[in-house]
Every structure is written in C-alpha cells, then in structure tokens.
Amino acid sequence: MPLFKADFHNHTLLSPCGDLDMTPESIIDEALRHGIDIIGITDHNSTRHCRLAEYYSKNRNIFVLCGAEVTTQEEAHCLAFFPNHEKLDAFQAFIDAHLPDIPNNPDFFGDQIQIDEEMNIIYEEPRLLTSALSASIEDIEKEVHKLGGIFIPAHIDKQKNSVLSQLGFIPFDLNYEAVEISKNGDPEQLLKMHPYLKNKPFVRGSDAHFLNDIGTNTCHLEMETRNFDAIKNSIKK
Image (tube, rainbow, N blue to C red):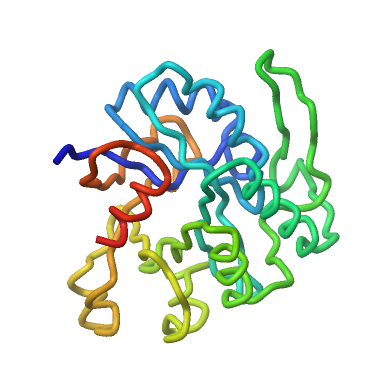
C-alpha cells in the first residue's frame, strides 16, 4: 500500500505569528519541494485561508487538509480538520461565536490578513486570533466530531499551550483521532509518563511559521489514495 508524506501543522500569514512570506501559494510550492503529499493548513482560530491553499493545489500532486489550530478555554492548542467547505464554514462560525472581543495590536502581535489569488488584502481580522476561545476542550472536540472532523491535541510534549502543560493529563472521556508531537518529542518518554496513550496514534507536524520550517517534522500515512476519509482512517490505524 502506498505511503504518503504528511505535514499536518502549518500557519499562513493570517496567523499573527506567521511570517508574511507564508502565503498559501508559497506554502504549497515549498511543500512540493519537500516531497510532501498532504499539507495541513492550520491558522490560529481561523479557517479563512484553506480555500486559497486548495486553489493553488489544483492539478498538482498535493492534498490540502483544511482546518485550524484552535485554542481552548484552557489555553491548550488542538488541530481540527474538516471534510468539505460546508463543514469548514460551520466550524468558522463556531470559532467566530467563541472568539473573545480582544483587539489585535499588529505592531505587537503581528498582522492578521487574508489575501486573494491576486495577493490583494481582502480581510483583516480585528480580534486577536491567538486568544483562547470561550469553549472548553471537550466542547470543541464535540463540535469537531459533530461536523465529521478530525480532532488532534497539538504538540502535547511542549511545556506551553499543550493539553498536558495546561491540564497535566488528557481527559479520559476526550475523543481524539491522534495526538501530535513536536520535532523533539519523544514518544517513548511520553508513554512512560502517560501510559494511557499506549494505543493512541502519534502524528507529527512542523508547526511552520516560516517557509524554511515546512517539512521539518512529518509523518507517513499508509492508504490507497488521498482524500479526507482515507486520511482519517489511516490516522486511526
């Protein structure tokens, strides 16, 4: 069965911490240069650049996994991916309803701009996208799965903004397809500290904020073809 190289975690220039060179077009170009078959678009608390990344992937040998990196009420980061635009838009509405009205300061945090195919700025998010949503990790997970999505607690080995750093453990009733570990994450050490993760899949993502970060932390999925359902099933295995 074919193996597909995946990088689940990448930020565009819409994220305030994303470099301005991280346009959806540049991300797709860079991912292809690294032989990546599946690229996740995961801006902080926003899905607004996923369609543009898909536009630049057309007729090219790469699949765009559309989603976001959400910050829970507990300030834990989690990746969420969705099967189609309808579900993606529904989750964006959920984010918009739970993102607090804290204004962004571009000079301090960075710009939060959405562009179109002509590199024109078509939207600037006024609220700070790195804020914690007014929804718990359990509520967000339930919303993701209600929409048929994939839910992955992000970089669980990190000492900041991970479910383990914020809660000390992963809630036992939380439903998640996998957990993500960072570039320096050690699965064996994590399993020693958290043996309940023994039968859970581990995935890797670059958490790229700059073009040279793309493809630095990848994993491989075994499946017949690239589509959302195949990716979801392969992750579970």
